[in-house]
Length: 368
Image (cartoon, rainbow, N blue to C red; front, top):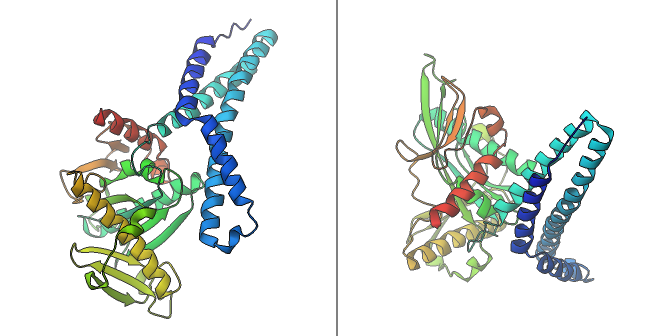
């Protein structure tokens, strides 16, 4: 006979769910959806493509957020019915289904709880990620490309749109640097905990002696800020270089000099862009990222918190925030949170949610 009783676990989940509903503000969310739906229904909406995309994207994300919250309410009710049926029928299989569903709800609530911690000034914005190869030669360039793939796979799993803005390929293997945008609500707040120096330890595939190699890569994450347009950048402060977009090994992917590199002379900030087909589009995209970086720099100086968001990332010994060890054992460990797993292959395939959640919680505790 089955005596399945998970009433305490369900009560705890309901309490957590109630707190989440309160923080998220379900009624406010419903009002926002109604307002966006009204905007999306305007006949001439698509006369302004950029505005239309923003409205429809915001509507889609908020509808998905509300649907997720409402589905949990229903699942909490359903699981109690499942318990009753499992006990009534003395069904071991049904009992197993209850535990599976309980674990699924716990995981989903944990993810939603982490989202409620994203209340920083720019947390709600899209994110621009830049990865640079650091110390370690060819292995570092290869590692930088592995990290790029890792974040692209993570975004793909979450169905977040990604735009690769610029990639500089290394001569032998891998990449020198890459910049890409993750366009999703709270992308910056979520991914900002990934900023810092990442370290890889493995048996180098580029070393004929087969020795263990340590290499580094720097990850920078900044928010893409719409108000950055208010930052005026005089033409005299910018050096503009144009060049031909290229792919791996220097293979041309464009027959015109459409790629653009902007150098902000007073600060030394450099932004390259080669994703768009025209020089004008690339320059506009590069300027948007440059203005975002300048706005952050301005705010950091005003708040006397210089480099708090992007940080000073040297990509070398002594300042790594996460280690990826492939030899002599298998482990990925975050040195700030102590969160670790023994499956590097899964992490490099985009399984980052555990690290990100632990990082967001750690950041919240660190600020208290």
